[in-house]
Image 1 (spheres, rainbow, N blue to C red):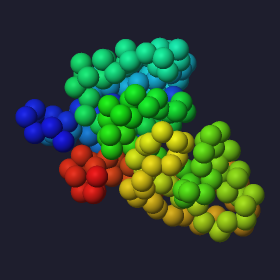
Image 2 (image 1 turned 90 degrees about the vertical axis):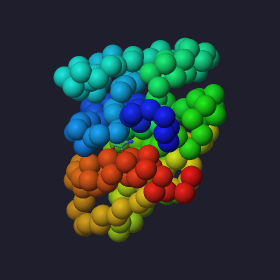
Image 3 (image 1 turned 135 degrees about the horizontal axis):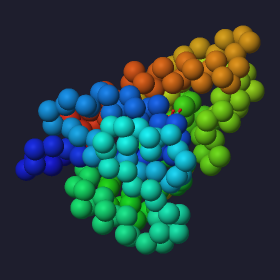
Image 4 (image 1 turned 90 degrees about the horizontal axis):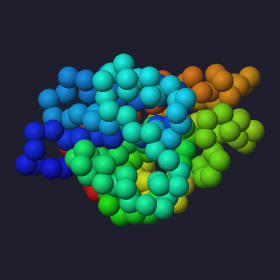
Length: 198
Ligand code: GRF
């Protein structure tokens, strides 16, 4: 990414508990060139804000109207010198303005094997319920670039797990989380190190 500065700065956008965010922060804590510089969140009560606080990472609590109608947050991202945006359980659609400002520099993780079981309202247990209801024998994770449609951008990486008999959304969620924790941080590093094509 940027060669003329010491660190590559990453912003993590998250609205939930933030367990992936914690793994990402842990992975890059002592990294010599990649820094988690900002956590962006749209829910004042989200667990991820406690992680930001505990880890001494600046947090930005965003407002819906401003996020979708204004470019003010873009200024904040640019001032913080953010190079890459990582979505980790962020449920709002990313505005076109932001996508255009960060082409192939926004990535997301989805808790199923896209293109199946993605799209609007497909998040959390809704996804796992849909996978089980479909009778599919496997699920997994998809890490992909973000474009202007939900869960649609070019796929960077997928990993699979089985959907066993008597699987519940909760047991499947546990398997998926383990795959996410293991794979998301190194894939983020790979994107920054240009190990992927775009
Ligand atoms: C993850 O399962 C991720 O796939 C999805 O949102 C969930 C976030 O979980 N996009 P957490 O907040 O990181 O625990």
